[in-house]
Length: 438
Image (cartoon, rainbow, N blue to C red):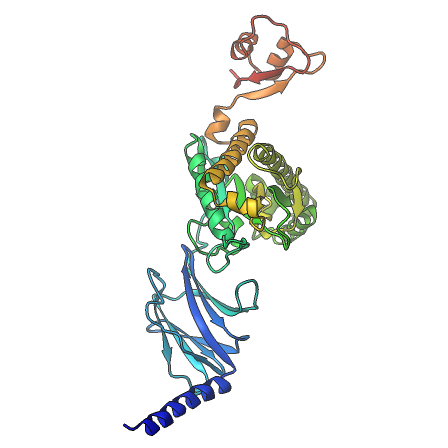
């Protein structure tokens, strides 16, 4: 082969490559697979907004996606690792030679969602495929109050995950990684507390849809939902932690939707759910549901104040009072819920702290202490903590020890013993421990 001939062949090769790139309006630059307990998410990274069509085939199960006017120069080797839903991802011959056909070979027939995403943050145009297990909602919702001496269940949501990294710090810290580490430390502390159990809504690096989080918490009969995040701003100046609760407007909106669909969603209202579902009196249904909603909102705010009280001991506060925002993760009308911003990952000092295992442990311990304090005062009905709880009473003007004892149906002697009192004298403002009724 002479030099002139080699140059001509090389020129033809580059011309062919340029021709392909010029003709193809779009290109597939990457494919990412995110397995999760309930679903698998596949993300196609594209240079432009995707023009696509898809269809399913059976025997064997396959999902076929055609990307119009596109090409793909990526390798399809080892795309799927340790995923039980997708056996293989490969290219196939498209009907239109200028398009790209990709086939997902599946292990079963799954609920399917396919949608495009616009560029945001570090990501460009994407096409997302979600494969959901068909039996993910097959559950029996039982009334928590029917259980006796059960554990208090705390659902912990580690914000973001999978293809959603959350906010990214100046030094490259991913919010999704920080929140998962704090969440795991918090779960360990809660699980070490007799009478309490933590449920991790996200246990690894995968995405859980916001609307799904309260459903999963309810599936586990959660008494409380805690969503952990790290804040961010366009400026590096803001710093500190804050605690968010559901805004009254969003709560009222969810309440209206729940009432309209009360036949289907009565389980969202706990013990009153069946009454609300069966009653023909709409006014009664509204009254009972409203009482439940107000109790949940009040409980959420009360717990949020406990969290802030503890957080200020270990970190700076950005907001000194709970703030109300419209957030999907907090929408459950039957589960007290808060979102905790543990600091600003966009602030250099906060970012450094948030990546410190010691600081993560301090944050987790502060939140755990708030959980302990909250449920010590207000243990959920039917729980072991409620059965063993000691209530407190603040002495008011005109009250004597015998009056307090009569009110709580305990003896004066028992009241004196548990409070280490040597006489019957008590003072206004004094706090007394109240044992269970004898």
